[in-house]
Length: 135
Image (cartoon, rainbow, N blue to C red):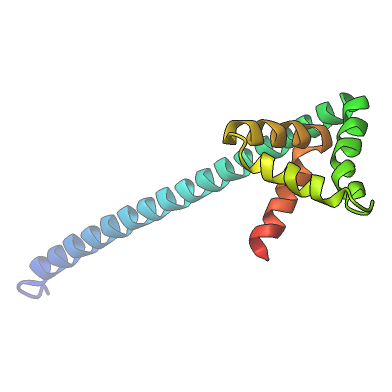
């Protein structure tokens, strides 16, 4: 015995079921795409960080390999004004010297800073600058 209209109801149910399954598949594919993008983004960030670290390490190794007399020279040069401040009568010369340095062009100050940073390792300078900003 067949119920009238049962085949129509079954057909509509199957149609709705198929549409729901296709919708779920599209959602799953979209979610998988988002996950793939997140993984790729994370991998790219990690790779950039590793590349930066490798570059920093290479810079430091080169700096250490090239270290020599220039490090000692910079220590002596940078220590002279501090030492002069403790010798009676020489402090005014230090003050005038630093006042004269204030008048130097910015490119000279940066060039000197880069020379000192390359001598002692720019990582130390970057750490000092970060401490200064944090203070």
